[in-house]
Image (cartoon, rainbow, N blue to C red; front, side, top):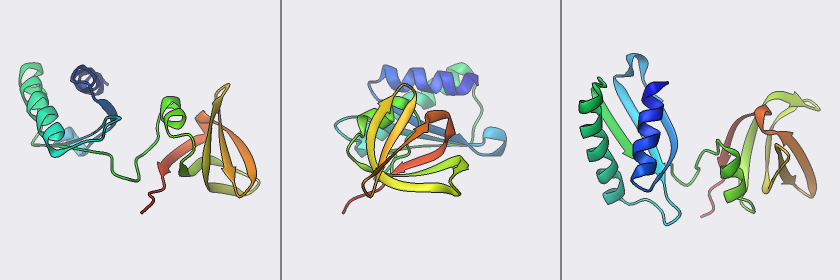
Length: 142
């Protein structure tokens, strides 16, 4: 999608990581989730929002509302780099197809090797193809 490419290029150009991008039906609401190794502040969100607002005007992207925020403590994991970056942290996974009758797993991320995500669950290490992961999120620690 052209819109996603434009947003990712703009966000990375500002020095942030595009975590996720969502649109409502007919793209009236645009939600952009950004991250940075040092964390995200309201000033970061404002900076990206102002930049995207100007960019959308130039690119003739029609929308009613733009929301820019951090991904939160339960950050979604989408790319192999996400799983590598958060190695050692607890995550919840949902697989596209069940493995031994189970689709949902919670455990500690143990890295990615040869396109396979390793997850330690209560002393048992599972290896899942990244393409099999439907949804993954960090488990927040308070």
